[in-house]
Image 1 (cartoon, rainbow, N blue to C red):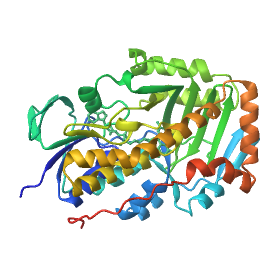
Image 2 (cartoon, rainbow, N blue to C red):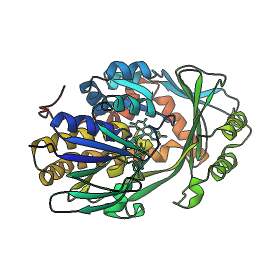
Image 3 (cartoon, rainbow, N blue to C red):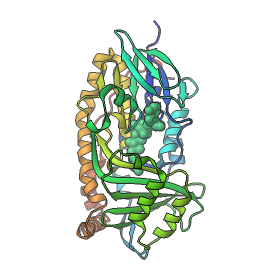
Image 4 (cartoon, rainbow, N blue to C red):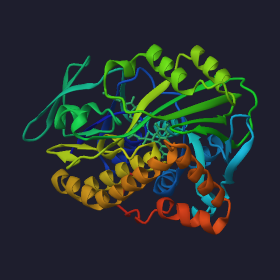
Length: 399
Ligand SMILES: Cc1cc2nc3c(=O)[nH]c(=O)nc-3n(C[C@H](O)[C@H](O)[C@H](O)COP(=O)(O)OP(=O)(O)OC[C@H]3O[C@@H](n4cnc5c(N)ncnc54)[C@H](O)[C@@H]3O)c2cc1C
């Protein structure tokens, strides 16, 4: 019997994970990635929980831990750079049994990609623009690559998924905007570095973070309260930089220097902070995983792990049953769990960059309280510890 073919749109986190486990289940995956090469830079992510367990099953832990960072302190500073609040990150390590690391999103993506690149067809610089379902397959139209048939198509193409748009309709039907914008960029040679400390400067409605990376790079992360729609301004770096200057340039802490560095960067990550809530994650022979299906947003601090988990479960269910049954089981297993993660992220969003001075005061008190281990467990425990058991599947082609 010939292997079933599966087109995966997106080579981020969920896409390569899905390709790996589909291969292990005996399918023949092809990945199409819109970017001309694997995306680099971006931002760092905290990685633990079920994603960490799946990475272990893929034999990736050593590489992930050596590419990653072991942040020891979250530090909040005032306008003069003095520490006003913060906590040691031991509590995260305790709650996760030491299975916790901070890593560049693009480093995790690259490590996942390396697991599949030699035995999976990968097409860069193209994207799905049309999907037509037939009785026994899906006819896919690519922007550049003409038409091809696949047995199944999976959208792993992130928050702004093209597969979701083509099959389910426009993003605004499913997008819940959390009222924040996030931006990030990296520079080389910035001082001071404060190795393994995540330093943040917060004012009502805005937060600017700084973390030292390998090879003398420094990452800056901006989060601020603003509700912007999908208008073209979002895609113009000049407009984005002007907006960041307008919001952050208060002349305090290191803001002026950081904004001057930003002017020179060619690679500014900039997006609104949103969740995706869909009534269904599949239709016919097409399904979605990761951010494309259920983006929990950066406020959950776990989107990558969840993208990997959804890929693993989808592949495992497809290994057991026909796609109609597998897609339904996949959603039944995960939907409740994901909804709780989304609710947790929404709760956290209101505390992340408080919009008033009073809110900021309370947030800093809570951060102070988390320096006391028992309280930290109470504050974080519910959102950090995963309650779902990873199912065990048969992987006849696992090498
Ligand atoms: C600032 C920030 C901080 C975060 N912090 C954390 C954290 O601490 N921990 C954590 O686990 N998660 C975090 N996340 C979330 C995490 O990055 C995402 O949830 C995760 O990357 C989702 O993986 P994905 O594979 O679904 O999508 P992505 O990683 O977004 O990958 C999608 C891929 O699809 C490609 N693509 C897009 N459009 C198309 C198209 N039309 N055709 C083909 N390919 C396409 C993209 O180029 C990309 O390669 C954070 C996110 C942000 C923005």
